[in-house]
Image 1 (cartoon, rainbow, N blue to C red):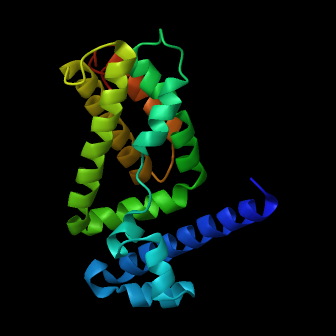
Image 2 (spheres, rainbow, N blue to C red; image 1 turned 180 degrees about the vertical axis):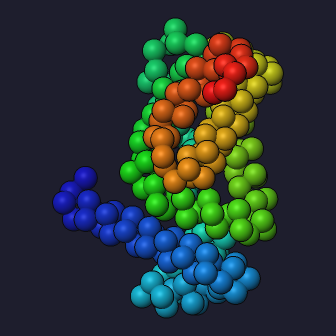
Length: 202
Protein backbone atom coordinates (compact mmCIF):
# COMPACT_ATOMS: atom_id res chain seq x y z
CA UNK A 1 0.00 0.00 0.00
CA UNK A 2 1.36 3.45 -0.92
CA UNK A 3 1.58 6.32 1.56
CA UNK A 4 -1.27 8.09 -0.27
CA UNK A 5 -3.51 5.00 -0.05
CA UNK A 6 -2.64 4.65 3.63
CA UNK A 7 -3.66 8.24 4.34
CA UNK A 8 -6.86 7.83 2.36
CA UNK A 9 -7.83 4.68 4.25
CA UNK A 10 -7.05 6.39 7.55
CA UNK A 11 -9.26 9.37 6.64
CA UNK A 12 -12.06 6.99 5.68
CA UNK A 13 -11.82 5.20 9.04
CA UNK A 14 -11.81 8.54 10.85
CA UNK A 15 -14.85 9.79 8.95
CA UNK A 16 -16.74 6.57 9.58
CA UNK A 17 -15.89 6.66 13.29
CA UNK A 18 -16.89 10.35 13.54
CA UNK A 19 -20.26 9.67 11.89
CA UNK A 20 -20.91 6.72 14.17
CA UNK A 21 -20.00 8.63 17.32
CA UNK A 22 -22.10 11.62 16.25
CA UNK A 23 -25.11 9.38 15.60
CA UNK A 24 -24.68 7.65 18.96
CA UNK A 25 -24.45 10.89 20.93
CA UNK A 26 -27.49 12.37 19.22
CA UNK A 27 -29.61 9.25 19.69
CA UNK A 28 -28.50 8.97 23.33
CA UNK A 29 -29.83 12.49 23.87
CA UNK A 30 -33.02 12.40 21.78
CA UNK A 31 -33.96 8.80 20.98
CA UNK A 32 -33.71 7.13 17.60
CA UNK A 33 -37.05 8.43 16.30
CA UNK A 34 -35.98 12.04 16.79
CA UNK A 35 -32.72 11.97 14.84
CA UNK A 36 -32.40 12.09 11.05
CA UNK A 37 -29.57 11.31 8.65
CA UNK A 38 -29.50 14.96 7.59
CA UNK A 39 -29.03 16.05 11.21
CA UNK A 40 -26.27 13.49 11.81
CA UNK A 41 -24.49 14.58 8.63
CA UNK A 42 -24.73 18.27 9.50
CA UNK A 43 -23.45 17.71 13.04
CA UNK A 44 -20.52 15.67 11.68
CA UNK A 45 -19.70 18.31 9.06
CA UNK A 46 -20.39 16.17 5.98
CA UNK A 47 -23.11 15.93 3.38
CA UNK A 48 -25.88 13.28 3.48
CA UNK A 49 -24.35 11.88 0.29
CA UNK A 50 -21.08 11.32 2.15
CA UNK A 51 -22.99 9.70 5.01
CA UNK A 52 -24.46 7.15 2.61
CA UNK A 53 -20.99 6.34 1.31
CA UNK A 54 -20.36 4.78 4.72
CA UNK A 55 -23.73 3.59 6.01
CA UNK A 56 -27.03 2.42 4.56
CA UNK A 57 -28.98 4.37 7.17
CA UNK A 58 -28.94 5.74 10.69
CA UNK A 59 -29.47 2.29 12.26
CA UNK A 60 -26.21 1.03 10.80
CA UNK A 61 -24.38 4.19 11.85
CA UNK A 62 -25.63 3.73 15.42
CA UNK A 63 -24.76 0.07 15.62
CA UNK A 64 -21.52 0.55 13.71
CA UNK A 65 -19.28 -2.39 13.05
CA UNK A 66 -20.41 -5.67 14.50
CA UNK A 67 -18.77 -6.96 17.66
CA UNK A 68 -17.34 -9.81 15.65
CA UNK A 69 -16.64 -9.57 11.94
CA UNK A 70 -17.26 -13.19 10.91
CA UNK A 71 -14.92 -13.19 7.92
CA UNK A 72 -12.05 -11.65 9.89
CA UNK A 73 -12.57 -14.02 12.78
CA UNK A 74 -12.49 -16.99 10.41
CA UNK A 75 -9.10 -15.78 9.12
CA UNK A 76 -7.79 -15.51 12.69
CA UNK A 77 -9.21 -18.92 13.49
CA UNK A 78 -7.25 -20.45 10.63
CA UNK A 79 -4.02 -19.16 12.22
CA UNK A 80 -4.65 -21.05 15.49
CA UNK A 81 -2.74 -24.38 15.69
CA UNK A 82 -4.97 -27.17 14.31
CA UNK A 83 -4.83 -29.37 17.41
CA UNK A 84 -6.31 -26.63 19.60
CA UNK A 85 -9.84 -27.60 20.79
CA UNK A 86 -12.65 -25.69 19.07
CA UNK A 87 -13.70 -23.54 22.03
CA UNK A 88 -10.09 -22.65 22.91
CA UNK A 89 -9.35 -21.87 19.26
CA UNK A 90 -12.32 -19.52 19.07
CA UNK A 91 -11.23 -17.87 22.31
CA UNK A 92 -7.74 -17.30 20.88
CA UNK A 93 -9.17 -15.92 17.65
CA UNK A 94 -11.16 -13.33 19.63
CA UNK A 95 -8.07 -11.79 21.27
CA UNK A 96 -7.61 -9.00 18.70
CA UNK A 97 -11.33 -8.14 18.79
CA UNK A 98 -11.28 -7.82 22.58
CA UNK A 99 -8.16 -5.66 22.56
CA UNK A 100 -9.75 -3.32 20.01
CA UNK A 101 -12.95 -3.04 22.05
CA UNK A 102 -11.01 -2.17 25.19
CA UNK A 103 -9.05 0.46 23.28
CA UNK A 104 -12.38 2.09 22.29
CA UNK A 105 -14.30 1.36 25.47
CA UNK A 106 -16.18 4.68 25.68
CA UNK A 107 -17.57 4.14 22.19
CA UNK A 108 -18.72 0.63 23.10
CA UNK A 109 -20.24 1.72 26.41
CA UNK A 110 -22.22 4.43 24.62
CA UNK A 111 -23.27 2.04 21.86
CA UNK A 112 -24.56 -0.54 24.32
CA UNK A 113 -26.42 2.11 26.31
CA UNK A 114 -28.07 3.42 23.15
CA UNK A 115 -29.12 -0.08 22.04
CA UNK A 116 -30.60 -0.84 25.47
CA UNK A 117 -32.57 2.41 25.32
CA UNK A 118 -33.80 1.85 21.74
CA UNK A 119 -35.17 -1.71 21.42
CA UNK A 120 -36.04 -1.21 17.74
CA UNK A 121 -32.32 -1.74 17.05
CA UNK A 122 -32.33 -5.25 18.52
CA UNK A 123 -33.65 -7.12 15.43
CA UNK A 124 -30.71 -5.83 13.34
CA UNK A 125 -28.25 -6.93 16.03
CA UNK A 126 -29.87 -10.35 16.39
CA UNK A 127 -29.89 -10.89 12.63
CA UNK A 128 -26.21 -9.97 12.32
CA UNK A 129 -25.34 -12.19 15.28
CA UNK A 130 -27.10 -15.19 13.79
CA UNK A 131 -25.29 -14.74 10.48
CA UNK A 132 -21.92 -14.46 12.20
CA UNK A 133 -22.60 -17.59 14.23
CA UNK A 134 -23.40 -19.47 11.01
CA UNK A 135 -20.15 -18.34 9.33
CA UNK A 136 -18.10 -19.27 12.39
CA UNK A 137 -19.85 -22.63 12.73
CA UNK A 138 -18.99 -23.47 9.11
CA UNK A 139 -15.33 -22.59 9.75
CA UNK A 140 -15.28 -24.74 12.88
CA UNK A 141 -16.87 -27.65 11.03
CA UNK A 142 -14.16 -27.47 8.35
CA UNK A 143 -11.49 -27.23 11.03
CA UNK A 144 -12.84 -30.31 12.82
CA UNK A 145 -13.50 -32.30 9.66
CA UNK A 146 -17.24 -32.44 10.37
CA UNK A 147 -20.18 -32.01 7.98
CA UNK A 148 -21.32 -28.40 7.62
CA UNK A 149 -24.68 -29.26 9.21
CA UNK A 150 -23.20 -31.07 12.23
CA UNK A 151 -24.65 -29.60 15.48
CA UNK A 152 -21.37 -29.46 17.42
CA UNK A 153 -19.74 -26.50 15.58
CA UNK A 154 -23.03 -24.59 15.66
CA UNK A 155 -23.33 -25.19 19.39
CA UNK A 156 -19.76 -24.04 20.07
CA UNK A 157 -20.31 -20.91 17.97
CA UNK A 158 -23.61 -20.06 19.68
CA UNK A 159 -22.29 -20.69 23.20
CA UNK A 160 -19.18 -18.60 22.54
CA UNK A 161 -21.30 -15.75 21.14
CA UNK A 162 -23.58 -15.83 24.17
CA UNK A 163 -20.60 -15.82 26.55
CA UNK A 164 -19.15 -12.79 24.77
CA UNK A 165 -22.45 -10.89 24.97
CA UNK A 166 -22.82 -11.65 28.68
CA UNK A 167 -19.26 -10.47 29.36
CA UNK A 168 -19.81 -7.29 27.36
CA UNK A 169 -22.92 -6.48 29.37
CA UNK A 170 -21.10 -7.03 32.65
CA UNK A 171 -18.16 -4.96 31.43
CA UNK A 172 -20.32 -2.03 30.33
CA UNK A 173 -22.57 -2.01 33.41
CA UNK A 174 -19.53 -1.85 35.69
CA UNK A 175 -18.00 0.96 33.64
CA UNK A 176 -15.02 -1.20 32.79
CA UNK A 177 -14.17 -1.93 36.41
CA UNK A 178 -12.61 -5.17 35.19
CA UNK A 179 -10.92 -5.71 31.85
CA UNK A 180 -13.11 -7.27 29.20
CA UNK A 181 -10.34 -9.75 28.41
CA UNK A 182 -10.35 -10.99 32.02
CA UNK A 183 -14.12 -11.46 31.99
CA UNK A 184 -13.99 -13.37 28.71
CA UNK A 185 -11.07 -15.50 29.91
CA UNK A 186 -13.09 -16.53 32.97
CA UNK A 187 -16.23 -17.22 30.94
CA UNK A 188 -14.43 -19.44 28.43
CA UNK A 189 -12.60 -21.26 31.23
CA UNK A 190 -15.95 -21.96 32.89
CA UNK A 191 -17.40 -23.23 29.61
CA UNK A 192 -14.40 -25.49 29.05
CA UNK A 193 -14.83 -26.89 32.56
CA UNK A 194 -18.47 -27.75 31.92
CA UNK A 195 -19.90 -24.59 33.46
CA UNK A 196 -19.62 -25.61 37.14
CA UNK A 197 -21.54 -23.49 39.69
CA UNK A 198 -19.50 -20.66 41.23
CA UNK A 199 -18.24 -21.04 44.83
CA UNK A 200 -20.61 -19.77 47.53
CA UNK A 201 -20.33 -16.05 48.08
CA UNK A 202 -18.48 -15.38 44.84
